Image (tube, rainbow, N blue to C red; front, side, top):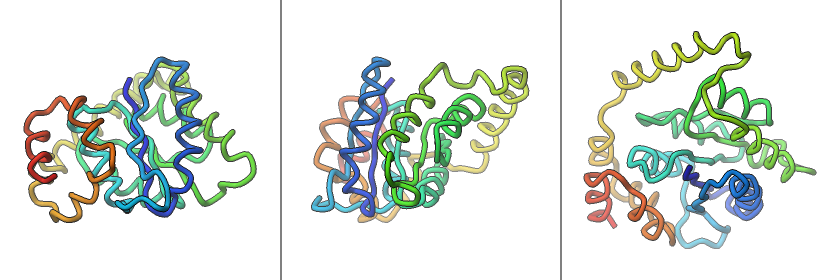
Length: 211
């Protein structure tokens, strides 16, 4: 599994803490983590939580990654930004039980964590436990287990509804403000990570022209 970490500007200083916790868990699982930044408050390219949503949608729709970990001060803005896009299902995750139940019940492909609200003593432990429970077992198996069938059915229904309520992703990219889009894909490692993992030639070609 390929997992992306994205930090927006208000919580960029915590990138290393989050990355280390995510890597510790993913390394044990054999997952690859791609840190798309922001990496610090001093980054030349500052991205908002809206741009974090754009970047996450690009990575997931192009299949450059399988899962996105992001957040903001409360986690709410990032969650809303990601869920604005097709083929993205993002949960708001505060603690390890949230992570486990989101994975098992909702079977999403992204999470948004509050990196300011409640982020105090022991925060790095909470992050580690969140990631452990998020990837504890194969997603979508249901919780409690006897609810697995209706939960899986509802997930499929939601996926079909989202296909109707969203336009195609390439159309969205073409209609986005160019400077907003360019800012979302201007991290120092975007080109290094994205183009070797992207599986959608149309998205890759379009973004190469933007860059």
